[in-house]
Image 1: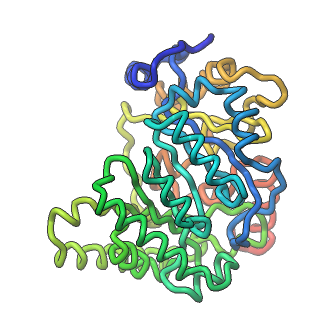
Image 2: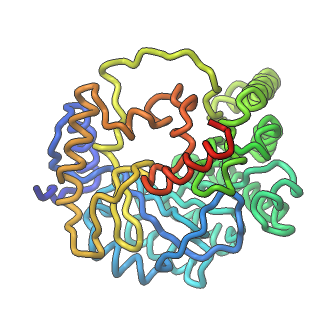
Image 3: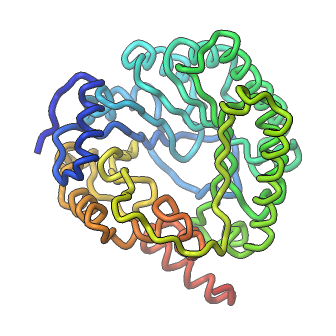
Length: 377
């Protein structure tokens, strides 16, 4: 079924309505579109898998993404540019931002970045329309930042860029059009400094902090998973909670109100009965397409469900048998196995090893075999 060609606001409203109705076949595109804008990278983060993909740039965006799914992009409320590598680490990054400002100015454009490309020219473009910058910092001090990312001497420059963006956001009253998130991928190497990360974010006046557990992709990363250090991780989360309360006790209420902090769920939480009406909205609201073609309903799904590069139609994928089965399972309270195990669906699933491993079937099996061989499970 072809989705309707609608104005952006009408399309977003219809998508929300069809989610509320738990429709299985949808007439409007998803309001959330994620583009796997894989690129080269100047970092060597310990938690990133080694990958080789077609390189994303403005030409690739125009030829492939606009060419194969342009109406999904134009009708979306939010379009996220993410992937392996540094999306903005290319010679035409400024030209890309100029093009997006011209073509989809009222769409929230979300970029994941390690922060090193946030030059004055890039920052100036962020002031022109709606952007969210998700800055993967992972540390509150230079030594740990270099240990985790391999970026030598970059910590200070990234922190300065974040401080500049947050200052300009306040000075120009851009809170409704410019947002910044400090991201911390939580591992056994940096979990103990969660509290310091929260304090740094407050000092920089960053509006939001997101701390998520690392996903293991290869055997060398197994030791990074907090799954194997639950007590220490819980203690670190509790310290971060106390730091947040200390900040709240000293801050002006109107300032603290705009400081959002999401810490990872603790291990060992008792099972909580799920509200039978609650669902994960991704099967209705979201699609993820990588620049080499594959499509997925979310970043956690383990198998590709279509490939635009090989000729699959974006509408046929979004209303295809896999998407419909996921929606039906979620709506009926009998989610697909990958959904049922996902931490985004139920926080207590952090107690399951599978929550901390990639969902790619063959890779996941190899990881489980290795973990068993090490006597860890």
